Image (cartoon, rainbow, N blue to C red; front, side, top):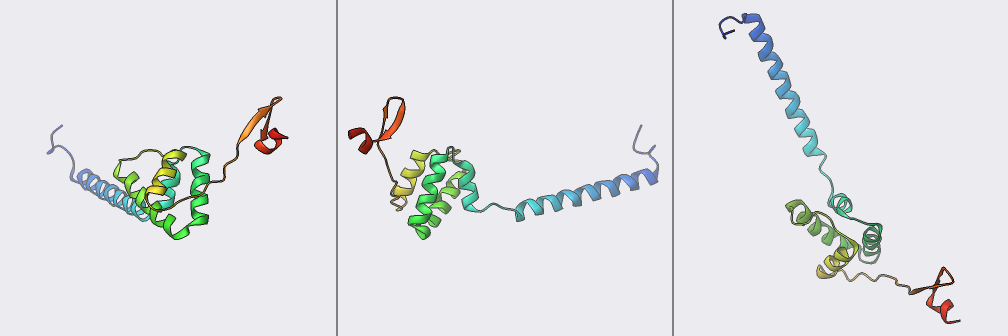
Length: 124
């Protein structure tokens, strides 16, 4: 079937359908651009484990403004494709490199008779 065999009314309908599909696709792209994620969401989605999320929360509590800046820098690196995911150690190192000296509470635990006990209880 050649282009000349197609009725004019069918051609008009096809053009109208293409026009509607094009407008719909443009609207969807505009919605996607307007729903851009915040830098914090980008970093949170890249975190691998719960410990990394815990470190990020500690940093936000201890140094809110500096952490906000560090998160924006880390988000740019993630969006550029240089980082795919971040574990707790890498996040800790990145924050320190960006000037956010996060203090993490640490505890030494031992296994005594099948139970985890703190150093103080172990020495008693």
